Image (tube, rainbow, N blue to C red; front, side):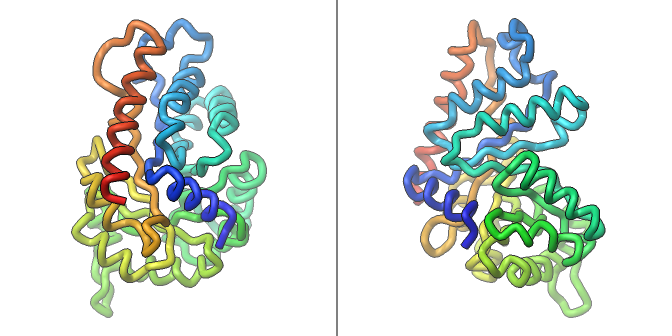
Length: 274
C-alpha cells in the first residue's frame, strides 16, 4: 500500500472524516473582506485551511483555477500546497494524461516539483499514458471513472459490445494498474445508485467522490457506499458549498467561523455514518 494511501487512511480513521476540501478558488468569488490583502487568493486559501483543518482529511487543488492566472496563479498554488497540513492528503486535480514521454513530465511536475501526494488523470489514451504516474509507488493516482457531470453519458456510460459500460472497463484496468496499492478512481456522488456496485467490483481501490454540495449528491450515501471494508479508502470532496458560504463578512474571522461551522456540520454527518 502506498505511503499516500496510508496517510489518508490514518487521517480518516483518527478523525472519522472523509472530508476533502476543494480549493477551486475563483478570484471573482473571493469575499470582499480579502480585498485588503496584497494577495487575496492566497490569503483566502490560507483562511479556508485554518477553518477546516480540524475536520479535513484532504485538500484538493483544482489546478485550472491557478493555471488560468499564469505565473502568479502557479505561485499561489505552490504556496497553498505548502500550507496544507502534513497529516492531510494533498491532491492535484489536474486530469492529465498524454503519450508516455509527456506523461512522465506531468508526473514529475506534480510528484517531484510540487510534491503532491496524489493526482487525477484521464484514462482515454490507455495504460502507457498512465504508467508514468503509477510508477510512483508511494503516491495515489485517481483515474476518472464515472464522473458527476451530465456528459458522463457521452462516453463513460456507453455500452461496449460485450454489454458492459465503458466505466466498468476503466475500473477493471485501474485495478490491474494500481495493484500495488496506489490506484484510485473518481466516482461522482450524483451516481449513488451505481456507487455500491462500483465499490463491490473494486474493493481495494481508493475512491475520490466529488459531486456533494453544489452538484446535489447525497453526503450520507457517498460516505456509506464509498468506503471500503475498513470504513476507509474514500474521500468526499466538497468545494463551492463549503468555501463560498452565503452572506457578507465583516472580517476574515467571521468568514472563517462560517466555513468552520459548515465543515463541522459535514464532519458530524460523516461521523454519524462511519
